[in-house]
Length: 159
Image (cartoon, rainbow, N blue to C red; front, side, top):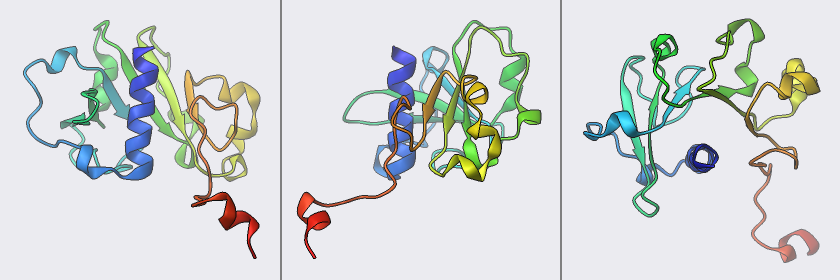
């Protein structure tokens, strides 16, 4: 449950670009206790550093939720039992690039705000079942995304 809450928090930040919730300061002393999100596709969101090896602490002061974000793929080689969430971006998802075999402590998450037609692999139900969590425009996603923002019902119904 903690991993799912963290996944939703990170998606909310990435979708709304809530830069005020981000801390790019030196990681806390208890950094080893924080969950880690490895962004598989490079340079995707504002809280990921341009340096592949750097770990950035992501926090939201209102909720107290924290995690570490990185692009450092060498974390996959560690034999730790710490949870590692690998965030895949749907448009750039390539089956031949996935980190296999997946270890027991790895969770895969999919963020895809476009139609699956833009990446034919994501039209396949079996391919979507590879992910522990998803955030797509489909209602059955763990964290569904809307494609439009409507300020009110009147906005939709008025001429």
